[in-house]
Amino acid sequence: MENEIKNIRQLFKEDLKAASDVKALEDIRVKYLGRKGIVSKLMEKLPSLDKDKKPLIGKELNVLKTFIQGELKSKGEVFISKNNLMEEVDITLPGIAPSVGRLHPITKTLNEINGIFISLGFKIEEGPEIEKEFYNFEALNIPLEHPSRDAFDTFYIKGDILLRSHTSTVQIRIMEKTKPPIQAIMPGRVYRPDAVDASHSFMFHQVEGLMVDHDIKFSDLKGVLNIFTKQMFGEKTKTRFRPSFFPFTEPSAEVDISCIICRGKGCRVCSHTGWLEILGAGMVNPKVFEAVGYRATKYAGFAFGMGVERIAMLKYGIDDIRLFFENDVRFLKQF
Image 1: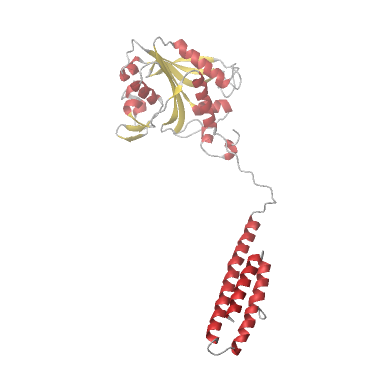
Image 2: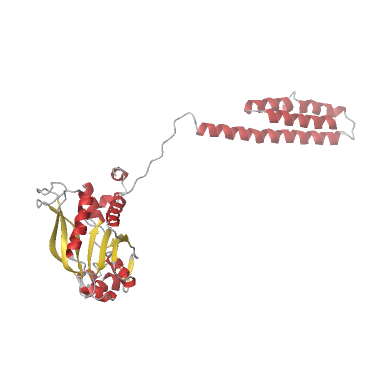
């Protein structure tokens, strides 16, 4: 009887290995554990065995029965798992195409601006967004009594530490550590506590530029910005410089371009003037050179600064700055 039990165990293993689905497992269960199965027939022989062999054979039969049940259950779970997977993933159906991302319009505009100035020989410089008053105000010839230094107009963190309100701070840092010639642009985020509306945001992006060397003239500034506006908005774009005032440049100018909507004829977008303001610029104030240790009699330079959102709004015909930051896919996927 012991050898017969061993043979049955081996036979069961071979049958189990050959089973390919749940139905085959059920057939094996009936074959071995059914009412007329192999194990059941062996159980029926127990009463005819010698008394001293009954306990041993009975124990081995129970072990065999438990073994067969366990193996059938384990293999059954494997088949069920495979069947569920096939139900969840129907390989006969067409695949679901993943959504393809794209660059944010601000990123696209910033990359385009950077690319134009890089082609003109400018390099990109960056600086910290958390700054000291010295870099944000004092070195830029912005006196203590200037309105922009009021707590209502600047995000102060603690003492003289603040969130920078322009990327001109990077100009100071570059000039502190570098001797002319300097030819660089400074893109980045800036922060001002403005009430959010269609044309204002408490956080926005700027690109500032700086060129310092011997014998730099205002005509060099005009030439660089003329090339920029034509490459950014089209060859037919005209540029106009209007006198203005900035503490860190002297002389200073506001720079306008001919309206890209009406081409200078006058429309609602340009308030019927034919011109759109895009940036501020000017020659570096000698007091800024003094703050960084440059001799104003030896060097000259120009600087300019523009809001990236402003450029993007003009370029793409967007009338509300809030659309850039609302993460509305219906708006963003247009770009």
